[in-house]
Length: 110
Length: 126
Image (cartoon, rainbow over all chains, first blue to last red; front, side, top):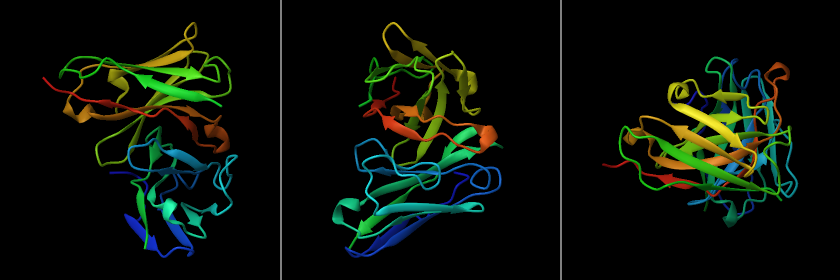
């Protein structure tokens, strides 16, 4: 049971924009920065966003993110079939004294 | 480009010790900037952070695993390792080593993992 909450699944047609939410509390997202990861089946997660809204080199600007209060969200615009994957948020939790991940959201392109 | 690659001895028997190694290329475990972490993923489940080691030897572990886990570096081989004692079936899953960007709890900056190994499957079976 994660301290972070994500919707199990999100789906949309190609070209659409989706948002994936990540909800937490004051001991985690309310205090610490959020990172986002994409994971294809049978592969390791890949960093998409760090420090709430910063894209590493090579990540297209179709991926954007924000954080407000104890929640964060990842937006994917111009959805493509290649975006079908699991997406995870992560942060630090001071109550647990641990790095924590959300349960993941499966994105389906219709 | 930094690359990480996990390796291990294969299946582990219950109650035995799991030992994994992460070989690092394109960077150095002594660079004094990044943290070197282990993260695992249970089958069809989410990701669980195990802990990290810093070049100075400082380690931080997930409190839920702290009593059974040791992470260390071998600077001569540019690698870091995970030892987990008294394994059970609950420890089965894919184990990843990862590099974490600099972070600081005092400034509200959480770890972010920018390089990952491909992962290694750990099975626990008698």
